[in-house]
Length: 274
Image (tube, rainbow, N blue to C red; front, side, top):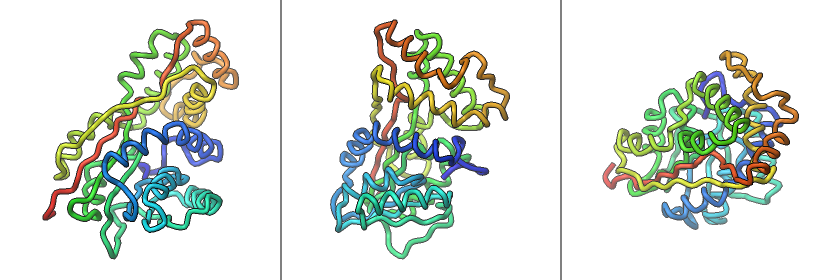
């Protein structure tokens, strides 16, 4: 559910591919959060900002054939891609709706509402979370994963080229109005909309393999138009076609690892009587 005029990274086929690769890498972290929150077989779950369907498909496998997942997404092209992937996976308990969450209605409440890397893009995440909470039954679950960039920037500072890449992405997002510390902010946000203080934890993949490095390098490719729009220079990164290989060489030479964006998970039960 991106901020108008759209999701900052765009809706290109290459960005969709990057999202799918990213989802594969971080799926275990998301599944752990949802299971810890109490999402399980037979439940009806609302997925906010479904994109190309990765979170919806993960939840569909958790709730099983007796459960149901409804995904809300603004972009029609993303929904088309998500539906094709769901059909290919043989999942029959997922549906998608092109809508804004503030305008979405349902004839029956949900047992849970979830989202990943969604609230960070919204100009008024409290309003969206409040609307979402109204759709969940009393005692139901609200569970989100959002990023925190502060530890990523600090940990990456020892590698010059890697650090320049992270800084360029960070600056582009900031100038575009994103909240890159939405992860820690979930603690305040949940309480602001009338939920209890959430249970929280932070996790992140680490490594030195080309796939992990490539996930971050490909973010800057998707962000190029936005970086140019907001006056963020990418000159220090050199040729983007060779950037991943050069960072791989830097990491190898330093005999170290890098991390993906730290992922903060938060969940709470909607109070009874609300």
